[in-house]
Image 1 (cartoon, rainbow, N blue to C red):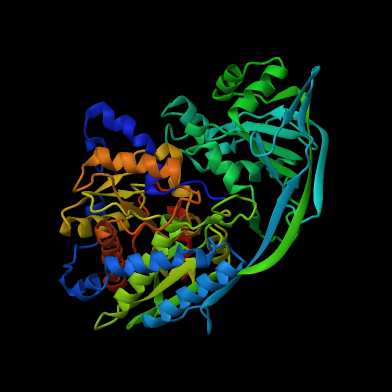
Image 2: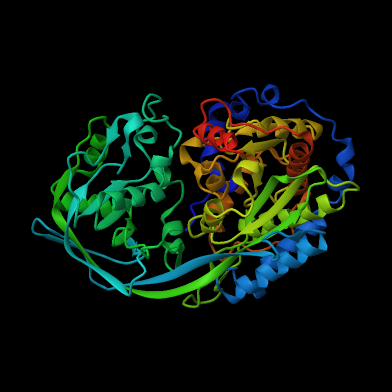
Length: 572
């Protein structure tokens, strides 16, 4: 499952800061001087042909097709995938691209789809109490192990705070603890977010230690049999319905050499309400336990309770595909600029009454439509760029960024010759905005190029209003960033040219509450594509600048990926 990272989700908490001042001035760019940190600002006039090739009609048509019922919600390894990857490759070919996976449009991504069927007897018990848990309503549980089923019977429970081992922060929630055969219970996010203390981790800005993906990985490294994360809407950045919807059907993963047996036997979430009852049954107060977990020197607490669950698996191994096209460079074809967006969504749930298809119109038919339009824009140029341009539609983003993770570990083009990349996910369809939000603001020199392009549109680039949600770690660019490639993740803002910022905030809240990861994320013929066009034109401007400038954009000093990149480039 993917946690929400769209602009709409990002902005749901921005209302608090907006209400504080009556403006969005606090969101204005305030990190390293991106303009000064990059190359000389080049004129954009020679890009006019490509810019003009990006149209609202084209974006709307591609989005409408990809989000239609015919594509069945674009689930990996399904009939919906077959139709989706065929459509994308056909559009790439029409745009003048060449197949980017050797002689094929497709990079195979081996996946396993595991549908968990928990038994009815999920429970915490002990201390004279029994707490039965209802699947979906109270708890979501599964296993990533590629096995017919798993069972935990009376597995001892241990509260491990935030479940973090971070030597650089002198923090170890597992210190002195043997969790072999035990189930660990932990909080989502990290202590910096919980306290707001800028001296603790990164203060209000989430670190990777706050991500649920890290927490499951660390629990497995510690040898835990089970791992349960407590859901809180503010700390997670999304409501329980996103958790219950995202893990209620087939769960995809890459298949490791050990068939994922190194993972904990059971992973899951419980609601905050269930956690409050859990601690009360242990004779403890949830709020006090949470408070203690926020303090340096926290020690894990063994609870006088146990956890029992049985899960039968429906296992299906399959191949999915990244769709890759390339426009070879004219002078330095062995250097690459990457555009990417995920094509998958949540598919079809035949157990639902009424509408069964999660069409994923905004998330992420819009991003794939932009990818196709950009391919056409570059293909329309009278003279191709110096560097090669890669266009990649990746699979299984909703299942944990799997398609991009596979590419990052098995790249078709050398990562140390991949100059930079742009990721597009869940684009703005609400009209023109005066701002462009940069997720992970202050990361790399690509922001200076974006700022240059935005100035030609009379716009400004701004930082995301909720860095505590860790959105930079929640989309496909992150897998490329982890291996050093400078990546830009930006999208249209909230200050609507026509309606103003309050209207933009209301649209953000409405999407998150009513359409994000729901069957209601469907194509709307009344969408205003004027802002989407401007955003995609900005992506084009940045890409052409990188492809023609000859420079290598860098991560800013102090960025966690800078040393990885420097080591990678040293091997060229």
